[in-house]
Image 1: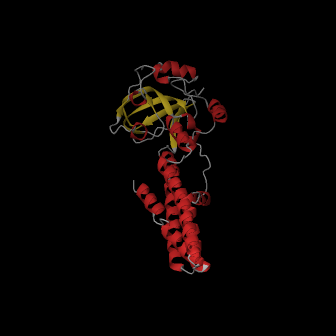
Image 2 (image 1 turned 180 degrees about the vertical axis):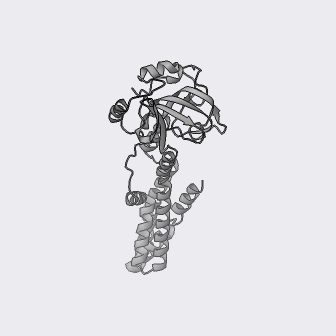
Image 3 (image 1 turned 90 degrees about the vertical axis):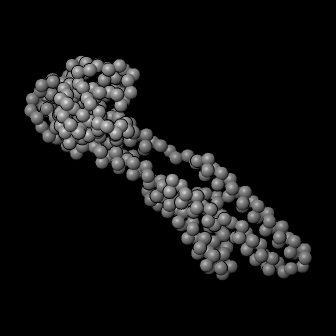
Amino acid sequence: MENKDVAWHSQEASEVAAKFDTQLQRGLTSEEAAHRLARYGPNQLREVPRPGFWRMLLDQFNNFLVLLLIAASLVSFLLGDYIEAIAILAIVILNAVLGVVQESKAEEALAALKRMTAPEARVIRDGHRQTIPAQEVVPGDLVLLESGNYVPADVRLVESVNLQIDEASLTGESIPVRKRAEVVLDREIPLGDRSNSAYMGTLVTYGRGRGVVFATGMHTQIGLIAEMIQSYEEEPTPLQVKLNQLGRWLGVICLSLCGVVFLVGLLRGVQWLEMFLVAVSLAIAAVPEGLPAVVTICLALG
């Protein structure tokens, strides 16, 4: 019955109730509600497993410039310059931690969406008012809305008495929206102007009403947002691409210059070990240790 292509706001409330086999006075029967719960699943936002902390941390080292810094740190350690080695490693670790914090923002956004969902819902079943866990709300349920309650699912209103709903979490509208169950709207009207419908996660600020549930869980508007957050695959930004290119060019230039300096020293009769140390020191000095951390900090601060 849940169908993303059906414009429930463009139909009469009685038509919507009829299509869900819902009696406007008695609601669904308990047996029918149980059947629909088994068919459509619980009314909750599905959570897709995200990469763990260690996976996200390791991903921060998948960068040529960072690998170049690690190599410089190892060489400094082998040459006995422990302070330089520790300083470079500290910068690399700081950069990795800040990167993990940035990648965790998607999980924080999903958690914020879940906090907006109602823990309980008031419905009419078998002709009686009942309070049930919001996860058990099903399409076709007759839901009661009162001031101070979160809307437990997407509903087509069938009754409204001075009903106002805060939809800022969904549309960004800062002023509560006046709802009117009796109106029938155009199919193409934007989400924020659908005054005959109420949506999961929005807050009733005034009045009361009742409505027929037409979407639950991931089929709701807030569920679509959660799905977009979870399905988003991060791609390298133009800045990250440029930094990787810079790292490769720095690596090539450093190795080339070190090779030239090493060969010139040998041709001038300098001991090969001495020239090797000079070349390595030059390579370490040429690596911009602070660049990854500076870029990450700037991005984290916005």
